[in-house]
Length: 248
Image (cartoon, rainbow, N blue to C red; front, side, top):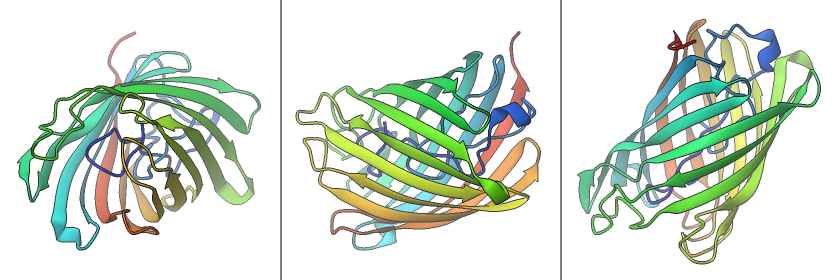
């Protein structure tokens, strides 16, 4: 489900993620602002909202802006439903919503430090294709995830899988991320999309700073630099809030 463009879906990733066995279910555990995701799920019956604004473009950051969200709901232990997408996009061709989507995350801890997950997802043609706000078709992805805790509060996430399935030749997405938790943390990520029917080859480096404003709230800010000609640069700011239990 990842993409840097507004045409396909976005998988955003762990910034201060850590093994959920040591966390309160009320603690925010954001998947943003990186392109990938971590292997952990929201606790069963709990909800968490991620949202953020970004400016991005290939030639200049003023080319486009977007507000994006990801509402995560814990359906059961190690099973999460996500409803995500660009709620607002502005480009030179128009303004509107982008392609909205859903994702299921199935998580499986294999040790105290390492967790695996698979994340199938789909986006739907809710964005106007003529305005460059959507793909004009349903697109699917299946991403595998490995997350692990390292010494000194460091954490890693590795993602890989096919994306933009349904547009023709799929793209292959890979990402390697490293983060460090704490009241002030950081995240770094190197990501890559192969060329396919859904878009050109994209590769970039993302860096972000995270501030834990409360147990249930995390603020992030940072940017990404494109390492290929077709990869947009971007700057962003976001907020993740854990809403607590919404059902038993």
